[in-house]
Length: 525
Ligand code: NAD
Image 1 (cartoon, rainbow, N blue to C red):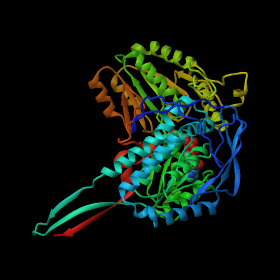
Image 2 (tube, rainbow, N blue to C red):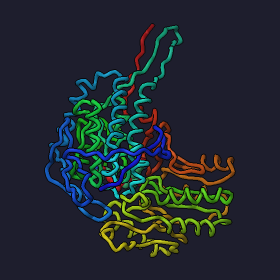
Image 3 (tube, rainbow, N blue to C red):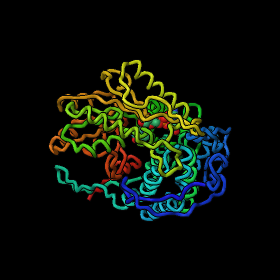
Image 4 (cartoon, protein in one colour):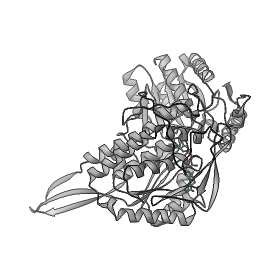
């Protein structure tokens, strides 16, 4: 039986939760029945098209990363199901949804948030079973953020005024210009496995707020919570066809079918940079606008004048949260020479004190990687670090438990030092619980090393000198820089990356601008 779960946090921020226990909720098929223990509830996860759960062309297994057990069979959507989903979405735009007043659309988004919270335990358990992330993290971050996403964009759409201009031409003609916001149409939403519900709702909520209909393709590794969301959306009175889910893979499967579909008006994608390139290519013939949130090789710069303990704690989170599988995680840590040995030693102790447990155990703070395949990739970088001449500070292998977790996909929290800045382990995104720590002597050197990457998602700067904090932050070639903190998010702020880390910004008004078209109207007075 799963533990009692808790919820959470002020809307619009990723902050500490307010604990409040909720009853365990049970759902009818096709969702999981979480009243049964893991391993005893193999279920069907189906596509959700036009308000109905439907099968696909074949099935694939949904695996629990903690012990390798199969927890569900998932219906893979073929070309036909993807087309049905797109057509259902298009029809929905021409019915009630397309003519709803903004305040009524917002009211339904608030109801989606309520419906998520009503199913809080079920969402948490589905996310934990799919990803292997600790239950403490899913209940503090992933599920509360999903509800907050709907509330924030419902708030914003109600107050998102647009510019207007009183115009006078040189020859004295007067006019009034004003813009109105119109939906794009049908938006294809493709998401990864690391924060499945959080990232999916980060895109679905603003898309719906702007009056679009969506067809979402969650990661094949984590199909559960997108499917559960269908129930919340239905309960909130969002009409059939506005929210559709197709399951499957990328190339030759639901992902690619979606990006190629001529009736999809835009693609919003979070995932690997090379997948972004493939999507761009396949969306090009129909000139779809794209919003891309991609990979990172994020740097942290730790100055000798930092507040030492909070910096060590912050960096430990920045490297190891979600087993290092957050796009914002720091894989490159630069520490001023004067405190290098002391800092490295403190970070090592933090890594070695992490509790590698069963994801359902509330004391666990470090779970498995997402899949056997991803673990192979991370282990290959551990080997590469060795081959490239790194000094291993801690970790570098697979932990042994002596129970079913040995069939799961765990690796040890790992720290290296001693690599050159041109080593592949310092250049390439690993997306695991691993960082390379290198010393620096001057501010200029630290900035140059941090910026020496083709990625540009996030950075963090740790210093007690406020002027230096601003100065260094402003030189980072990234989408977001944190000073004396990490992953402190206000959902109204712009979010995205430069270089290989993305195209465009989402968050707040930037999301509304992507998910809508502006029609400027000019009236001669
Ligand atoms: P991925 O690119 O392998 O897959 C993401 C999604 O794209 C999945 O749903 C997958 O099925 C689909 N897909 C794959 N190939 C496709 C294709 N050719 N056409 C259409 N769809 C396709 O990424 P992942 O392994 O699931 O996630 C990890 C990556 O995501 C990391 O690189 C991480 O940095 C990045 N990420 C970025 C952010 C951000 O906000 N910038 C957030 C989270 C994760």
